[in-house]
Image 1 (cartoon, rainbow, N blue to C red):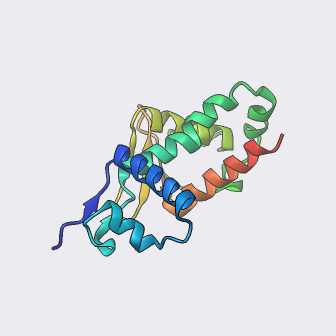
Image 2 (image 1 turned 45 degrees about the horizontal axis):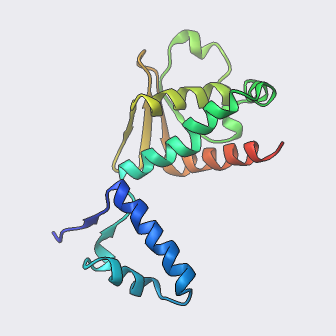
Length: 161
């Protein structure tokens, strides 16, 4: 099997900086030409999206914004009243009975994901499904597309004052 070109998170940051510079200085540069200027690996063997990049995206789109939103009590309170399924679908793999008796709100979901992300209690499988867990063995599983829907909805919610 041919060796793939994996990019570490810091290398990805540098690559994005180089791409940004190229877009500014050479806006007509073809992507294949740009790639050839930064790597000897053929484009079809490049792997730019890694589990580490996904973890960084989850931190920057869920964990950190949720922490910042906690200062806005009115907005946070609103999310405690809305059902999580308004924003995305997910699978309950294990949830303690006490938690099952309460409605699963967006606020609960974001707090749960924030904790899992921050404490590295998430696992990414080969199908790009992500399972989040806590110290009490509660587990929720998301398909990547649903996580993207959640991040988009959360971004949209935060952008409206």
